[in-house]
Image (tube, rainbow, N blue to C red; front, side, top):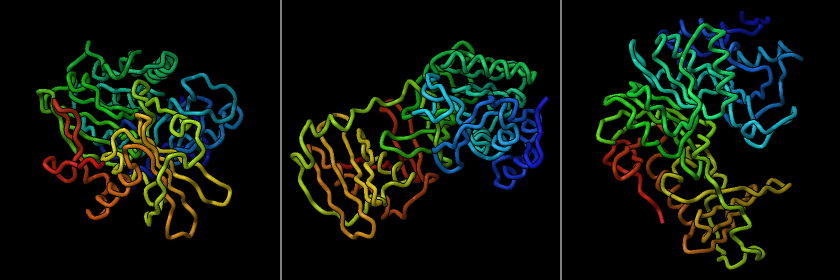
Length: 390
């Protein structure tokens, strides 16, 4: 039996999701039969709908009404930090498992376009809600969900059983899929990737769909919807912005800041110039995505100061190049220092300008094609690839 509280509950969330277009009529029976509160643990850190920050802990045992209000709000809920090593009530360093924002859950299920009889592979069981919704919709024997963390998988399986549902939950590396039950008509990831694993392609039916959050090393992320064409190829468009926890096996191991200046004081051996492009203009989610498509092997960090100014640092993964761009509120010109064989700020400007002169296209104008030569991003059509800069 699910809990209820005045002012919170499935009906209110359903109204929000229906009004936004995320919850469509074909998924309404599953939404009603598989309430989210059955698939959320007692301890949660509520997020915000348009970002990656978390609010303080809510413990159901101490404040059941606040817990229920959060569960039936259209927000993500962090349920684990730091691969389970975090203890205590505060925020951990990095979220490692969550209950995804309901709007995103049902938008991605709409992208998946499941039909009766389809067999679905889910990567990232998490709390078990998405696989439960799929199992209710498709029935016994049609849903496999792979979860890397044994404790997370065990808890999700227990929630499935209490709900009278039986998707197959497998503990394993999501990059490898689950070949024992292949092929699948649909594959969906509830974690983000920087590269679509080959196993997913191999285990999908020809004509099947892969729906996954995909993002560059530099930043930015969107859901891609790929049609599998056979022969190791697939292609499709991005459908919407996203911000998911990274697949553990694809987490980047980035060199630290100190690896670049090599003990020297800034500006070290860098060359100073000035730019009219504010560092603030390149920080948006789609801007990061577009820059990352063009600047392979680059990442960034920000050093903030008390007066509202900050330094945007850009680095190359080979540790040979770096750039700093200093932002000051109200300024029209910004100091830049660059070092190494790659002029990383020049690349950033070129990538941003490429996007700007094309009308600042959103995620839905971009697409991705997979083939023997790897992954290739494109704008508007596969024959218009996004160029590399530098």
